[in-house]
Length: 57
Length: 255
Image (tube, rainbow over all chains, first blue to last red):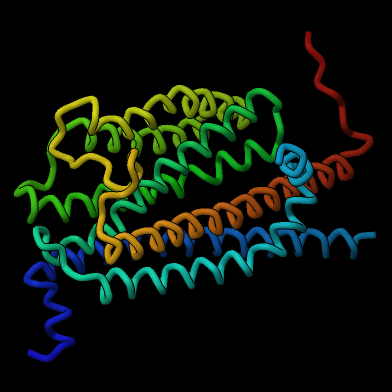
């Protein structure tokens, strides 16, 4: 067994260890994606609103 | 400290300062998570009893700490929102809740994935596990309550009171392993007499804890900025509606 395969096997606990890291990755990156996409959407909406305000006057 | 807090409690100042800090905060978060992951998954040796499942601790313990820290922030922000009615405190509380819920969820799931091979069970209703599950439900309850009212200000007030009352759970979580006979092990890092963990496993744990804390802070700042921009949009739309309706506008008077 190569060193990498040995590492992946996690001493026989691969299913538990990698599931735990997988869940953490999914939940935490989900938090990051929703925070960033929410920020971009609100920024865009504000920019549009301010542009409208300028053209109207 | 008190002075600087009040200085940055001004929303416009907060937007300027956080915009400058955010890139550095993001870089530092990525650095800590990168070093912590290599340390935890590669450099740290397997535990002599737990084998490689000890690596689950590098995400389980930090997410538990951040889940509790997040609730402390939520309660503190709710208290200042109730007492001083400061708009930034309300924004801070609402922005913290989903993040804290996410970290607490990671804590619960990873704990379960460690318990299955090590305890022989996915879940037990012991004091520590139950009090952390209550923490998760407190976060969900806060979010549900904050959005449950037509009058947003009333919803926020009700949710702030829930956040304050629920804060009693945080010390209960910490001392649950002392006060009750739990299957969960007692504290091994935040204890009198210093940590009882070997340095080879302690350093990746602390770096991951710092990384998770920084990740929480980074996303918290982003969510607060989003909420402040949304409030500005609402104010602009209200002003536009007022201007459009000028002349036709009749104030609503009580009968």
